[in-house]
Amino acid sequence: MHKNETAPDARCDASIDRRLAAARQLARDGRIDEARHQWHSALAMRSNDGEFLCRVATAMHECGLLDDAIGLYRLALPSSNKLSWTHNNLGVALRAKGQFPEALAQFMQACQLAPNDVDIITNAANAHKALGQFDAAVAAYRRALRLRPHVDAHVNLGNLLQKLGQ
Image 1 (cartoon, rainbow, N blue to C red):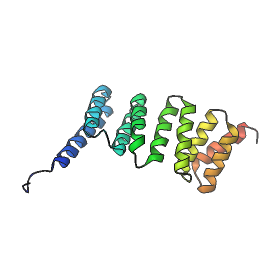
Image 2: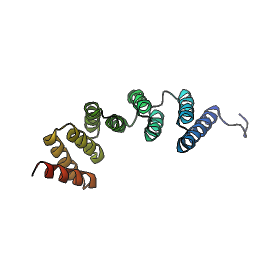
Image 3: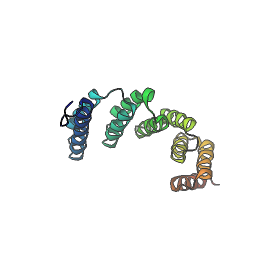
């Protein structure tokens, strides 16, 4: 390879980066279908990379493309290096669709993989609460607070205890 040539992988990475940047801009401009096309074009170049799938899924989720995001998070699970956060993000997307039992299952998987992650525990507590599993929600909020003070856990626990008359 000559000094001024770019390695094939670097050219591919640059092309992917351009597509992702274009997709972000298109999404900001409200051109979601065009953004989706750019994301899918980038995905075609790197479909076996779990971290990349999660990045695109998160971008799609932020644009309200929940079904696309859920599909990508599920595809990413077998190859993700950050498996707890892949389960967590899948749970967040499922929760946004109102699929609370499925969301809770993902949060619980994430908790098993990262038992001391306060954000994940708080997400699990919120899902328990949404399902009316108040004792489990209280226990999870308290566990999160024992690990680290967390504003969301404090507020949600206080609101739940007030609702329960405790």
